[in-house]
Image 1 (cartoon, rainbow, N blue to C red):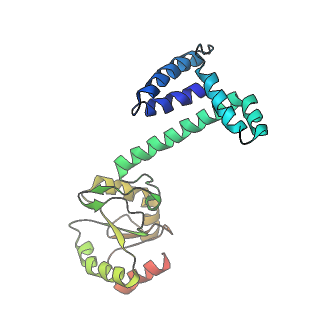
Image 2: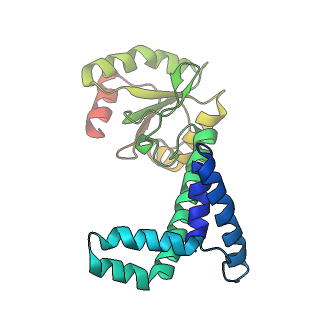
Image 3: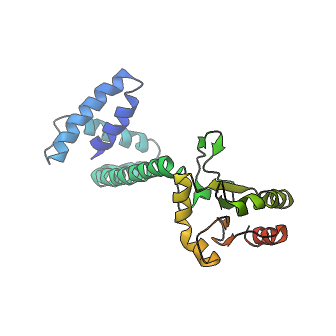
Length: 217
């Protein structure tokens, strides 16, 4: 199964070099044979095996012998790992496009920040999120209070408007159970801690919001 791995590697490298395109074509022929449980009529798999074992042999003879004897099994393991990692990569890309974060369950763990309209969609440094509605009068009253608490605590809320932004609605829905548990309903403004998964909702004093931040940072 080393030919399968080699095919994808050479396919990518072939974008930059002609010589790898030839190897990709050769490995593809080997892949089609192996998928039909036929022996590979190309010596490519043997060449790859010989090169890998030779490099290992220079550093550790015993390990080279182990790899040589179990090369087919190790190839299958690498193939499975490649398939699994590709699935996770595709899932992360899908979430990034749909939710604006590669990890919608835990956006704070997202290693990628997406910029849309000059605004960060996924902020990995945000320990707190504020879900609000653009025309919500209660949310508007909380604006100066939120700014005050941010200055006093040093924590900045990742502000997500949910009345008109479908992606933010989907992100909020992922935490709906936590918010409903602590607030009794799913409404705005809702202040949510990404670390403790606790929420506090509605209008409140600066002291109350500050206490929430300090207790759930």
